[in-house]
Length: 203
Image (cartoon, rainbow, N blue to C red):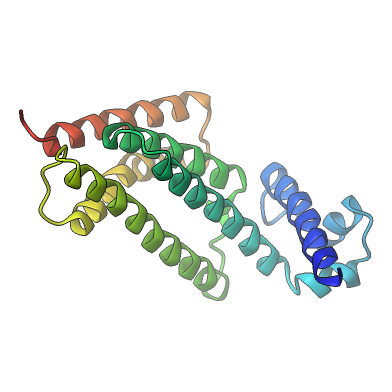
């Protein structure tokens, strides 16, 4: 029971923190405000998360885990490999939007703060490559995709899909409005179609 209550309390904290970070950004949120939002003493909040940085990292991890779970669920649906790739790309844009709303991209203040975040990103990217590799392998085994190395192909595809996102961040910083997201979504769709045209087996 105690463990269940602890898990539930953490979920309440993370939900409140997510809302704060999404609205105000990392730097403007305080632990006092998060504690007040859920009627918890600051000392109790620090029991679960000793620093604001650790709380923020857990919020980002939860967002990333949700994306990975969604992709795995989609793979388990047994839809066509081509549709899997299309849905995967759409989910990536949605995930990026959630991270941008959390102001994750502003979480680059010192090397001490960046390191845990970069480690989290590396772990996420490794899992993402593995999931995309699954999709490509399903397509290869079904005779729909012509690829020799699913892992290498997955890594290259992810690099391609990162391209438009990196470009817009370079050009517009964190000012990513509805129009920008619409362009990013369309660019992602077009990249997937280019990829499919390249790997789909000719009949």
